[in-house]
Image 1 (cartoon, rainbow, N blue to C red):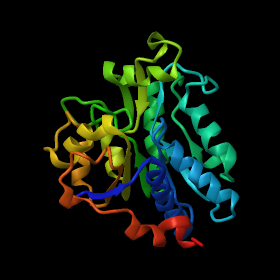
Image 2 (image 1 turned 90 degrees about the vertical axis):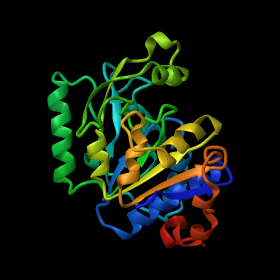
Image 3 (image 1 turned 180 degrees about the vertical axis):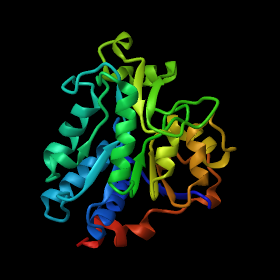
Length: 265
């Protein structure tokens, strides 16, 4: 099935639309299972979800989460760990049960076992209902870098130099950026019942075009999403600027029914 493309006017509208999709799922399904991203792109979505929660429009009491990835060799309390990112930017501000939060441990004594255990936890939860993805400039999703094949399961990965350089803005120097990470595999992501990818900004437009309109190839990991039956790309105008215009639609058609999980004013 073709990828569903939603184009918004700007980053703020993209974030609101993404939050509305998450809220809609959480509102309609008890114990919804979410796959959650980090980085700068989803920050606006998290802020909108927190706002909805504080307004009493949505509860995360029964939601189960699995984060996409984590650096290897960084303590959870390190300011650049994804564990700390999630608590400071989302979990500390909502009513989620801490026992329902799952984040890979990049300091586990046996990283391969950590990855196997993560897969088992996802399976025991009943699988992921919605996984939310960002998009790397090289087309990576989670920390699945371009390579010769699509990775089937959660695993340890060596980060490409372009990814290290892109993430260096969060560190004092590029030398401090970890070279390895643990990540959900492409197969893990593709087993999710639905997928939503967020991309914003002119620097993502080439990766968006290759992912949506190019061939399915592990050299552009996000291109595999063309094969998923339920996937939506939520883009701002800059990120969508190279796409065939006939594929696009405005988010305005869906906003009324989806905003605040159907509880919009």
